Length: 298
View 1: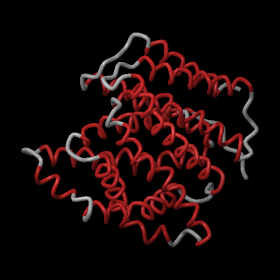
View 2: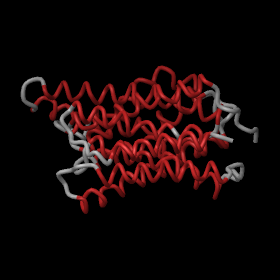
View 3: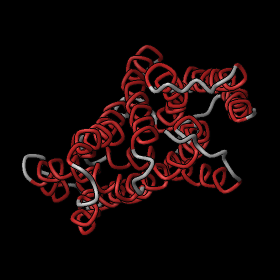
C-alpha cells in the first residue's frame, strides 16, 4: 500500500472548494423537504446521480474486476446511499445549519476507523489533539445552536448524523486503502450506478415523485425538484469525484478535514435563510480552525 502524498496548496484549495459544495447540500435538502418526503429526497438524489452517470456506466464498469464489485457496492452504500436517507430524516427535526455543524464529526470517525481497522499508525499526539479539538468545536456548535425542536430531540436526531459520519468515514478509508490505482471517476460511476439505479426505479414508481410535483402549489414542486437535482449533480456526483481523487492522493484523514469547514458554510446558508445563530458558536468555529491546523502540522 503506497503512502499518501503530503498535501499541497492545490489540495488545500480543493478542500475549501469541496467544503463550499458540501456545505450547500444541507440547505438544498431543506428546500427539497418543503415538498418531498425524506424518502423521496433520498431516492431522487441517488436516482438523478445514477441517471447523470448512466452514459459513462458501460465504459467504467468494464474497468473494474468482479472481485471489486462487493467493495464498490459498500462504498456506494456508505459514501452516498445511507447518508442520502439519514440526512433528510434528521432534517425533519434539525435545522440545515445544525446538520452541517454535526457533519464535523467525520474527521474523528475517519481517524478512529483508520486507526482501528486500516493499519494507519502515522498519527502522532499533535494530530490526535487536532482531531479532538475539531470534534470539540463541532459538538460545541451543535450544543449552542438554537433550534425549535429542543435540545433533547436535537441530540436524539443527531444519532442519524453520527451514523452518516461513520458511513462517510468507512467509504473514504476503503477508497484510500483499496482503490488508489483506479480513477476517481470510475469509482464514482461504478459505486453510484450500482446503488442509484434501484433508487431511481423506486422514485419513479412507488415513490410517486411525479404525483408529488404535480400536486404541489404553483411552481413549488418544480423548484423543489430543481433543488434536489442540484443536490444530486453538484453536491453528490461532482463532489464525490473530487473527494475520491483527493483521498487517493492525500489519504482519508486529510480529506476528511473538509468536514471542519463544512459547518461554516452551512451556518452561512442557514443565516441567509433566517435560521438562528448563537454567540457561543463563534469560539466553536475557532476551535475547528485550530483543529485543522494542528491535525495537519507535523
